[in-house]
Image 1: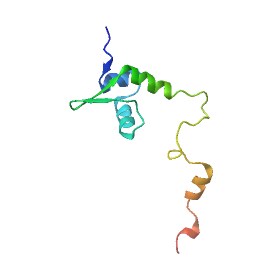
Image 2 (image 1 turned 135 degrees about the vertical axis):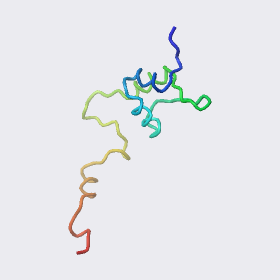
Image 3 (image 1 turned 30 degrees about the horizontal axis):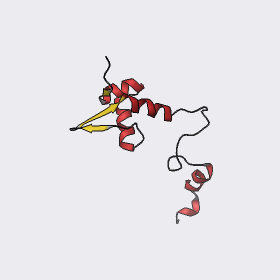
Length: 88
């Protein structure tokens, strides 16, 4: 019988990510739901499955990043260095 409560390492293996990648996603608030039991992080298998489902996409051109994470061409152009930005 498989346990439905997983450690971070077990959860990372389950979703085929490295442990540090899953930890970074958790810290950034972009990872699956988790719970703290004592001082330990645990994941429910159902929450990992739901997170994977929420990440499904039909095309590589469809961005799954929100506006705070992605930058359009206009935003990138506006961030680029222009000579008149610096007194000289």
